[in-house]
Image 1 (spheres, rainbow, N blue to C red):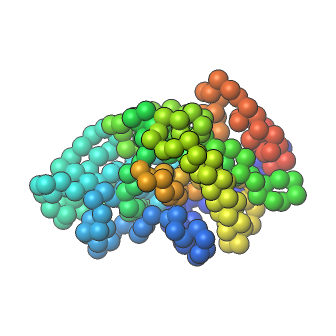
Image 2 (image 1 turned 135 degrees about the horizontal axis):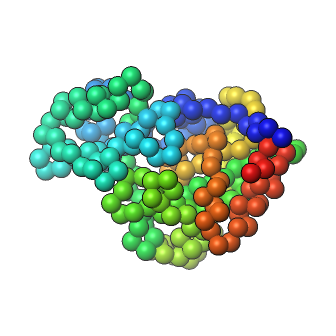
Length: 251
């Protein structure tokens, strides 16, 4: 069977959809289209800002911008560059973007598991009856010196429970967070359905900050599941496939 879940590439369009939902709004970091005015505004408000391709995937071409004592520092993968003024920074980012649209997003200080930053993937799928279900939670644990946690950017896939055991959060917080994220996944699926037809699966990338607050970094309409094969326990991978058979998730 052919894969038939709808795909939307624009992160900006998906962000606008989510901001229309009162329940989901509080989970969205401040996000704006990239231009000079918005860059200066975001840098005035936050110590860290992410510069992300609007239509990108896999953590590619994401640049983290930080304020420093002498100006600003950008980081692409592990490469860092310093700028003395926001104007210099803007010129370089604009050159890097070229004709491709980019977004600016408030930087979230990720919680750490055994000293490494991580975010959480919430896999949400439709049943044959058309109801959304959060079928899997797993984490992407990044390298301390990298910008993105993505698997193809050097991140490591781990189970949600194992990752949370390596954090400073209490053991009672983990089931609370799991329930919150599963509810959030279903709410996002229902929100997307109100704007566009044909979605059968979504992958939420959710950051948890040092205070335990969850933030939706982005929603993937064609989430990759092959990294789950790297886990010794393949049960999550097979669970996702079992839900996805009716819309073509065979491989």
